[in-house]
Length: 215
Ligand code: DX5
Ligand code: ZN
Image (cartoon, rainbow, N blue to C red; front, side, top):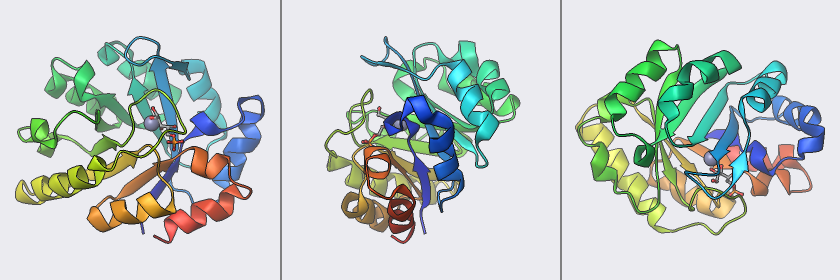
């Protein structure tokens, strides 16, 4: 059974508390919160106060995905805001090892996201230090995009790398996930699935989450 992390980016922001309650009362495992700075990605979403507001009502861990430049500057602030997992982009970090250490010292699990064009092999020498790798199956910045199929192969490669290095890293995939793409990803070795539009734009989000959980 995969870990399911519904992305609040697709939720109704004017009714955020009730959207959070929907996830609390579902089979979902985590809350996926997308933080965008308008610089690393061409969109702006979820700042620190919004993460804190979610945290106040969330009864499951916050899986915070930072799509920002200079993530090091904000690590302690996201720990205070309630993040359990803090994921930075490989492409935004010049000193990834140091960044991961800082995330762990702040009491969080450390994640690394890879853009669609970034090969899994860049993580060969650091995989043992990573709690979670987030494979992007769309270009980060927006919900509702089409799944990039090459992500499935990347999940398989990553699974092999993790086994080879005897690491305990979780594999999460983000973008265009539905029951069909989700099934392919789970078969390839994904441990966790992020789903935004598929969950929140469905008639029955709790049922959609259960369908993903059953993959
Ligand atoms: C995209 C975000 C995703 C987004 C996924 O940059 O990282 O988490 O919410 O949305 P869907 O599931 O609609 O592709
Ligand atoms: Zn995300």
